[in-house]
Length: 477
Image (cartoon, rainbow, N blue to C red):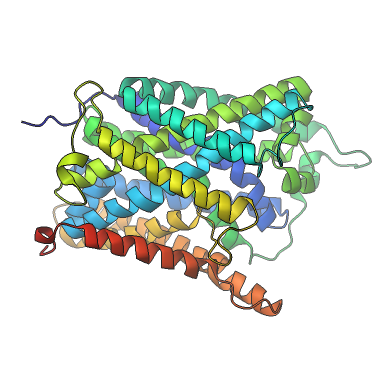
C-alpha cells in the first residue's frame, strides 16, 4: 500500500510557515511600490496596508472554519473539493501549481538575488555589475542558482527544509523589528536639514486628498500579504492539523499585520519620501543605523527573502502531487510517487522547479528589462494573486449553502467577510491594472494598453491546457 506524507510538523512550524512565507519579502519590495502608487502619500499608504491586512484576516477567518472541517492532502484544494466538487478542486490545484505559486516563487528568487547583490555592492563598491542589483544580468543568473539551491534542500530533506523555514523566520524579524522600533524613535527625534519639524511629521504631512491611487496601493499590498494560504499545502503533514492549522493562521495573520504597519512607519522615519520612492528602503537602514550596521541589516533582508522563497517552494513542489493523489492530471502514478529515501514526491518536485523557472524568465523579461514580450507584459507579482481571490468567491458561497449544521457566525458571517474582501481585491485589480492603464494610454495617444487583458489571455490558455490534461473518466464530475 502506498504511503502518504508523514505527520512531522508541529504548531511552531505551522506558525512559522504562515509568518515566514508572508513576512520578509513583500514588505521590502512593495513598501516602495505603495509609495510610488500613492505619489508619496504616507497616510494613504498606511490605509492601504490596513485594508490589505483586513482582507487577509477576513479570508483567514473563513478558511479557519474550513480547516476545522476538511483535511486531506492540500488544504486549499481540499476546501475547493469539499465546497464545490472534484472538478473545481482540480482546476484550483492546476491554477496554484502552474500559475499562482510558481509566479510568486519566481519573484522571490529575484528578490533574494537582488538583496544579496545589494549587500555585496554596498560592502565593495568596486564590484562591477552588468546593470544594477535590480535589473542586471547577474541578478537574473543568481536568482536561478538560488532557486535550484533551495529546491535541492527541500527535495533532499523535508526536515532540513523545515529547520531552514523556522530559523529564517526568526532571522527575518530582526531587521523588521529593529526598523520598526529604532526607525520610529529616530523619526520622532530628528529632522531633515533645515526642517523645523521631525522626519515623521514631515513625511506624514504628505496627504493629497485624492483617493484614486488607493486601489493600486491596496493591490500592491496583496503580494506583501499573500502566501499564508500556502501553509494549508502541508496540512496533511501538521500534527493535529484541525486544531493547530487554524491557530497558526490566526496568530500568524495578526503578527504579520502588526509587523508591517510598524515597519512602514519606521521606514518613514529614516529617509525623505522621495528617496524612498526612488531608491527603496535601503537608504532608511543606512540613515538610521549607519553604514556598517545598515548594510549588515540589508544582508538580513536577503536572508529573510530566502526564508520566504523556501516557504513558497515548500508549497510549489507539492503541487502536482496534490493533484495526482485525486486521480487527476498528467502521469498520475508518476506524480504521486513518494521517494522512500527523502519522503518527498520527487517527480512533482522536478515539475515544480521547471514551472517556477519558466515564470522567472517571464517576470524578468516582462518587468525588469526592455520588455521581451511587448504589449503582452503584465505584473506577475500581483495579478495571479488577485485571481485566487476571485476563485475564493464561489467557495465561500457554496460553503454557506452546504454547511447547515454550523452556527450562524461560522456559516454566514465569516464566509461573507471573506467574500466581501475578495470581491474588493478583484475590483481594485481591475481598476488599477485594467481601467487606469487603458485611460492613461488613451489620453497619451499610445493605443490600447490593458495588462489585465493580456494576463487573462495567458490564464485562459494555461487553464485550457489543464482541462485537456484532465483524465477523461474524471470529466463526468
